Length: 169
Image (cartoon, rainbow, N blue to C red; front, side, top):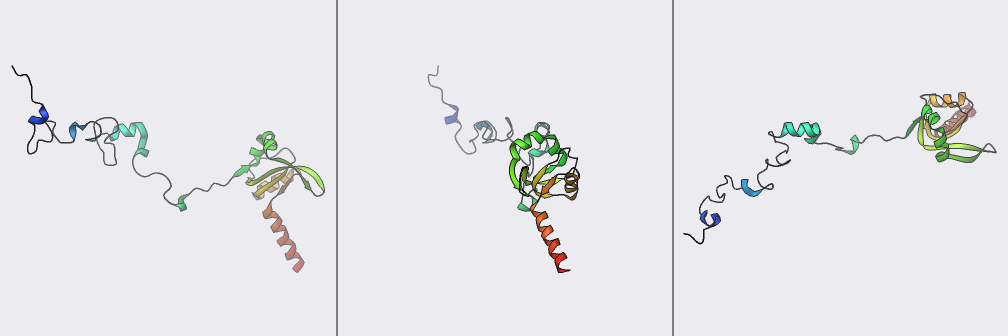
């Protein structure tokens, strides 16, 4: 009867015996060795055998490039607000953006949306004075139709230019 059995490691020495009977050297290393056994291993760009599984779980966004690749592809992030949005959220907008300012000698409440461009979709039901970064022609018409005002830096410049042209004539 043998008292001390030789371990497999000591028996498996010699040329080409780095696998110890597990096939390829990398196969018996656990999850970090041979890719393609457990979990998401082996689901890289060229993987074929787990592709259907990955597509089912994550869709086509798992493979290939995503995201912004250059500055030129960056989306424009202009802040815009339609007249209908202003009408819907008038109460909360007045709380957040409402300010008292002197306009034409009188102190009046102004909706200060100076970071936004106002667009003319929808209509207002309340007479308002709005300060904005820019405004579309339809928005200006919609606000002035009900007796409100829109203060836009761009408009002031246009008015000055028009006056100077008239004076030259």
